[in-house]
Image (cartoon, rainbow, N blue to C red):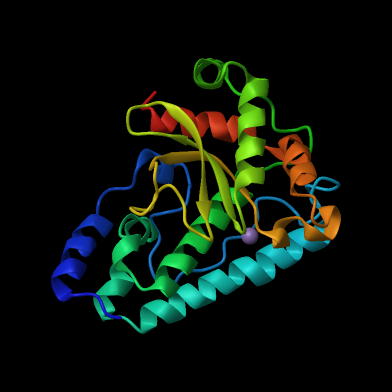
Length: 239
Ligand code: MN3
C-alpha cells in the first residue's frame, strides 16, 4: 500500500507545524525518521517493586526498540516524503497509513509517553489543584477516577492501552484503545490529548503479576508521576 503524493504533501505541511506546547515540554511527537529509542528517565530498577527491573529492561530494550526499528523499516518502503512526517503527523493520519506504520508509530509514541508518566514509588506527588478539581468534576472524586481507569483497563479485551484524556471541549475522559492505537489518532473515538496512559499488554506486567491485570492496574498508581501529569493538563488546557 502506498500513499498518494497529494496526501503526502498535505501531511508534510502538517508535519512542519510548530511544536505544540506539550512537545515543547519534551513530550513525544515532533521527531521524524529515522526514529531512535529514547533513554528511560530513570534506571531499569527505579520502579521496583511495582514494576521489576527485568520487565522494564525487556519492555524498553526489546519491545520499544522493536517498534522503533519496524517503524523506520516500514517508512523506508514508502515514498521519501513519508519520511519527512513528524511522529505526531503520522498519528493524526493513521487511517490513511499502512498497518505497519500505524502500529509501530503508535507503539513508539505510546511507550515514549508511558516511560515519562512514571517515577520511583511514592515520588510522584499528587494532582495539582487544577487537575484535582477537574478530576473531581468529571468523576466525583480522585478515588472514583482511579476506579473508572482500572475498570476500563480490565474491560479492554486483549492488548491495548487505557488513557486519561482531555477532549477537545476541555472535558476529562477515561478511554481505551486496541493494540498500539492511541487517542491522538484520527481512528480513535473519542479523540483527545492524553494526560496519562497505562500499557495493558501482558509484556508490561506478566513476570510480576502473571495474568492478574487488575492487580497490576491497582499497584501502578504507586509509580504515577502526578507532577508531570499536572503539567500536561496545564499545557493541554492552555493554563
Ligand atoms: Mn508495551
